[in-house]
Amino acid sequence: MKKKGLLIVVSGPSGAGKGTVCSALLKKNDFWMSISATTRQPRTGEQDGVNYYFLTKKDFESKIKNEDFLEYAEVYGNYYGTPKQYALEAIGQGKDVILEIDIQGALKVKESYPQGVFVFILPPSMKELKHRIISRGSETPESLMTRFKSAYKEINYVSKYNYAVINDTVENAVETIQSIIIAERCRVDRVKDEILNSKEGIINEQLYD
Ligand code: 5GP
Image (cartoon, rainbow, N blue to C red; front, side, top):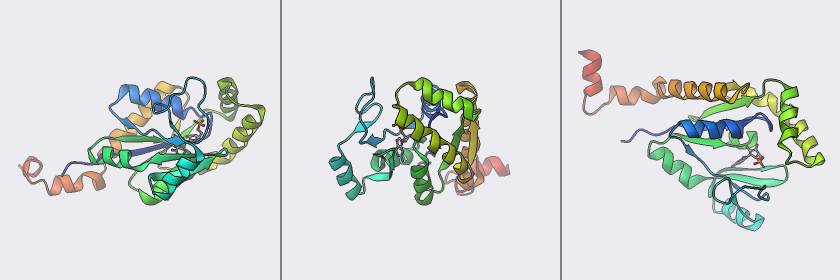
């Protein structure tokens, strides 16, 4: 049986830099990044099928009915969801899959897929988080306030995750997540079947010679 890949769920408050960290992580590693579906409008430069699958509310709701999503959530008045089929197929093929999703979505995935690796990205300080949200320049004053307020609340959810990673620099955050993934691949509950039941007996021989 082929060894399954890991499902790595990355979330954190708006402005913590999870998008930048995940992009950098993908450049350096052969991970499979899930492309989410959303009903929000594309931002300048965003492409359908690259950044998101941009759907109408009607299409999104029909996919909810069809149970096409691993999870979905309403974030800032729009739907966001992880298409189920591609992510599960990739994991089955032994690929490590990254989901960059909000906290509500991550907690839903944790219920249905507790063997996932749940990583919470934190800003180095709340002052820096505010600065990052403002300097992105893509928000209206109202949506800025919404994002600040929810960021303060969201920080508390760190306790539901397996790992907290401080994004002081993207390089440090990427290195830390890579280390987490290496360690997770060695967890006894993930590898014990492979070690004890290896058909070829290669691992057993190596262990007991
Ligand atoms: P943005 O509109 O800035 O691209 O994303 C807003 C929020 O939605 C971010 O916190 C992002 O992580 C989250 N998000 C993106 N895709 C998904 C998804 O598929 N599911 C859930 N639950 N959240 C998502």
